[in-house]
Image (cartoon, rainbow, N blue to C red; front, side):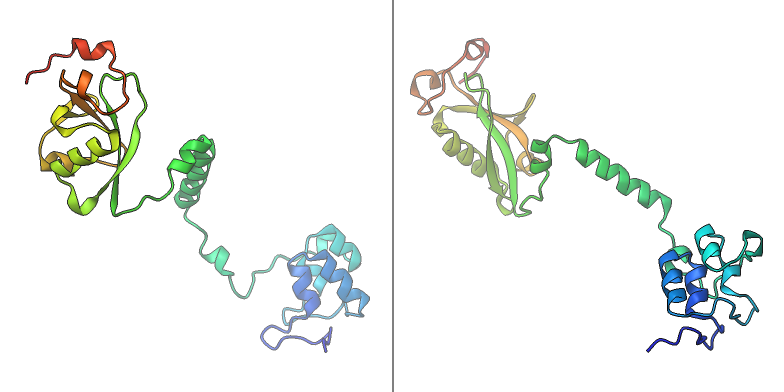
Length: 217
């Protein structure tokens, strides 16, 4: 049971004082309808109408704005005492705006990756097929031979027909340390020897670019 005119021992404040102080119009209206005493005073000798500047509440309590007395809360709420750092709020807002500006495809590709796998993009150089495919390497086994075998298998190319692996746009991958420096979604090409024009098992067409590339073997 709620005694509307009972006061709290800590500050002799009633529910009506509390509602008026926090400008809760609906609560003030409800308390008055239940018979709350609008003239009861707290320990500072204030009636509820002196704790608000809200015009609707002042009208309900039959008070005037000039009676308003600004008082400090006995405690400071945590959200006021410890507001978020501005730079954190701004940073979060900028991140949200950036993510919303990304095309849907980019947002999907930004999903968390498997930490155990290195995702690479691969294709055959100088072929009619310009698109890359994605291949995955075990991060615990980042070796040149493993990469070469993986690319040959995924692209359908015989290993003996490979002249070199090119890290786009212009770097040759030739040893284990080179492979360990690769990052996710690095673009790689298999550059084939001239024999690959007729011997490759991949259904790639060889473009004019192959004819202009100087290959020694």
